[in-house]
Length: 325
Image (tube, rainbow, N blue to C red):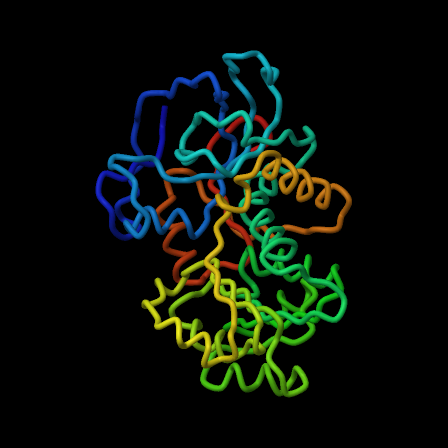
């Protein structure tokens, strides 16, 4: 089968389109023909070596496709499924943990199915777990026009929170407002001061920071005393180590580095969050903005455009020419 393989970590150029043996599922997995694969920042972290994986490896965790074989016979052949926990999804076939997939309707848009779970579940645990948003709460979301940013904005707004976001361009500002932001700011000096001033001269209850290094200290400045900073990504690079006393300086704030693995680890938690996302899409309560798709062999271009912030919303790789791709 064809796949994208990484033999050594580095820039987008290390993503090589090649032929590899097809995988064989274990008893707790199902074999799936991949129709589309989602492209996410976590994929770039593995490619760069920020997160460790033994080379050679096939990147990608997320996608949609049809079940080819279930060794236990629990999932019928041909069932349309989506997943976000199957390492090796940049390939024509992948083995998906049976407990880590969710069935989707046959008429579900494959672009949405391939890109909704990682971003949707991330937004769900941030808004419902890390800090429970609701009426009267306020939040600041960095990278407001990104995939997670737009979904989290929709969720936060629907929960009744006041939503502030940060973007870099006029186009992204429009997207963020369309997602439901109450006020959109630009990156730069004085960001935290602007947010505080607009929020009644006080910090927000929670900052959801997926940018990392470039915005981290502004995030600490923008949150209220005893508020929460959720550092859920590092699009601009990893944050340097800090002295915990800095959290006291800013008013005994809570700092967490949540991950989707930790927030779907309890029994039934993945299915609960995944089904909530799927149902919200079906009901029209969540809209995923898939703005770019690339053939599998152009995965390097997809990574490059993602990291250079040339894209907004979600991007996917087209893997299978057949079906609904």
